[in-house]
Amino acid sequence: MMFEDLHENNRLQLAIGLLIGLCFGGFLYIGGVTEYNVILGQLLLTDFTVIKVMLVAVVVGMIGVYAMKSRGMVELHPKPGSIGSTVIGGIIFGMGFAVLGYCPGTVAGAVGHGALDALFGGVTGILVGSGLFAAAYPTLDEKVLSKGVFKSMTIPDALKINPWYVVIPFCILIAAVLAGLEYFGL
Image (cartoon, rainbow, N blue to C red):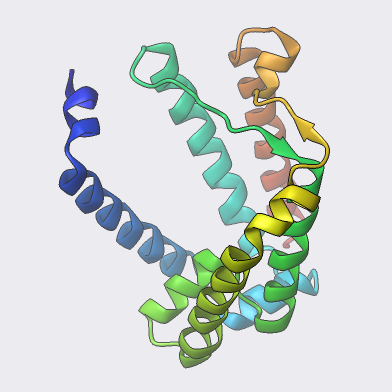
């Protein structure tokens, strides 16, 4: 009942989104992943802070989403994808990351703590890139993005098994990777 009321209240959705976004940026900052040197260290494979933060987020998110799904609190609606959109998106993301040293999430967090390179380079890049993509979208969608479409399903759906048979082993694997990174001082 609560989620149906929320679904109909656009202002509350925006307020919750803003609050979650601010918290997300704060947690990125606290985790140290909005620092250019940390991101550069990740790209040079000398600092694994970003990977650690991302893996912890994957575990928390996976357990949280599937726990809520098991209780009937949420439904998953995965979107279909395509080879074309994945390749184009990966190239655009990779170019921006390589040139600036930030991804969209860390740009927002870095702007929040006053990084001018993230503000002028990152926000400008996101706005210009989004505008160019929007302008090119009709042609790109027809000729590239819609090529190699694959179904919208989760790994448990694809394997036709209980989601916990995927979630639990993945969480154990991620915990082992995190423990290994700590053990080797990475």
